[in-house]
Image (cartoon, rainbow, N blue to C red; front, side):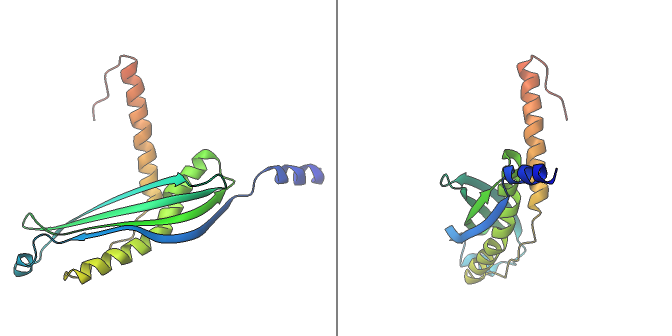
Amino acid sequence: MADEQAAAQQDVPQQQFSLQRIYCKDVSFESPATPEIFRKSYQPKVNIDLNTKSNAIDENGNFEVVLTITVTSKVEEETAFLVEVQQAGIFYIAGFETEQLRMVLGTAAPNILFPYAREAIDGLVVKGGFPALMLAPVNFDALYQQAVARAQADGQQGAAQSNGEAPAES
């Protein structure tokens, strides 16, 4: 019996997740309204967009994950600054089923990359002459679950439409 359990455990691939490298893939800072923007009272409206993408870079289990954060700050409808950082990493991931792999790529990897992107954004904003911008922590697990739920809802709605049913109203 113990031999059967040991054999079964050996058949199951061991899950591995390790960081190979972190790097900045792209950085952009624009401040189109300077120097006039510095004469205005700085009460900004800040918009933050997050996006992640991943792809296998070889057949050995290495994946590139890119976290893109775009921050737009406006004062009186005029763009004070626009900063975009693409923080990337190479991760070795093995032994995960398809859905588990998607979850690791969409949650664990961005959680590792986020502090680096946040620091890069803050540094660029300060060097641009603006007050420090410390982005709040992001719950990538919750964002991933929302994306999965949205995709399922879109899939169900698409299936209903292809069956001739009217889409559900919200």
